[in-house]
Length: 73
Image 1 (cartoon, helix red, strand yellow):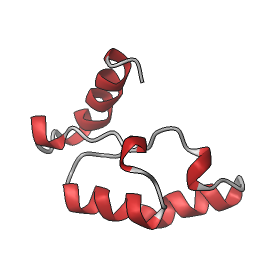
Image 2 (spheres, rainbow, N blue to C red):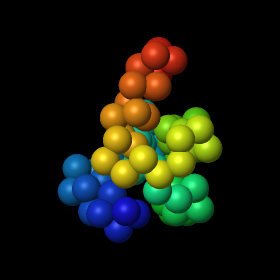
Image 3 (cartoon, rainbow, N blue to C red):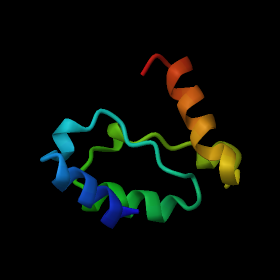
């Protein structure tokens, strides 16, 4: 996940400061945390809800998007 995101960021000349939110697949907290650290993102820039639902496979990103929207992020 980090390498793909880094490639996209490099292609568009983005840094972590340019990203408002990273909404990753909610498979594993340690992976999400490692990606955020590698991309130099603040914890407030990463939407995480795995502690509420676990790994919901294909529904994880839509659930995270919905929650972010409901929280007016």
